[in-house]
Amino acid sequence: DGGITQSPKYLFRKEGQNVTLSCEQNLNHDAMYWYRQDPGQGLRLIYYSQIVNDFQKGDIAEGYSVSREKKESFPLTVTSAQKNPTAFYLCASSPTGDYGYTFGSGTRLTVV
Amino acid sequence: GQQVMQIPQYQHVQEGEDFTTYCNSSTTLSNIQWYKQRPGGHPVFLIQLVKSGEVKKQKRLTFQFGEAKKNSSLHITATQTTDVGTYFCAGKTSGTYKYIFGTGTRLKVLA
Image (cartoon, rainbow over all chains, first blue to last red):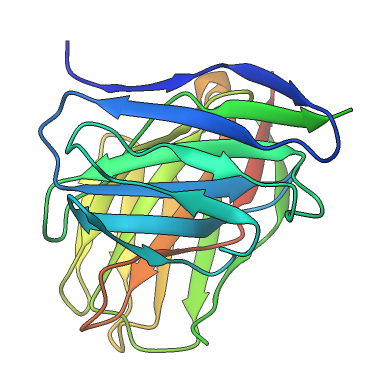
């Protein structure tokens, strides 16, 4: 079955550490996105990529970095510069154009 | 910048009652999408509206896009416990690639 796989499901990070969240899709979608969701809040866009080797900052990119070396993969690194990283991180993908997003099951990141 | 607001933020209804959530954009949208997120889950795409005044139905769910393409609504008839979750709208303006998600409406259905 096609879909998006995010790993790990839960991640604990010590202050000052960088961590990388994995996002892999086998839907052959060109576009991929990273969103952050805080408890009881909406989704805020971190980064998005329309094509391999190209990506753009979203609304809250500070403290995060991404790469898009393969069509199937769009990993997100949460750096130590992100002051409040505890949140639920959602990866999504879509075909090019106006189509609905397919979301992964998310990674819950907690800073300890 | 573009903002998308939803009201109400929370809604508790008795099973069998109707429910409506409203989505309002600060700018004219080219299209709007609706998603449902179950508690502890991830958003799932429900529908997309493109035309001014468009109305679409999915069983007990009715989606509407305003004439000015700046607002939208989702109406659920005779709610069931399976309708529990947070409903998000997401709007996009012409010339952009990204959707801006609304703040969401959390629905609780009391049996």
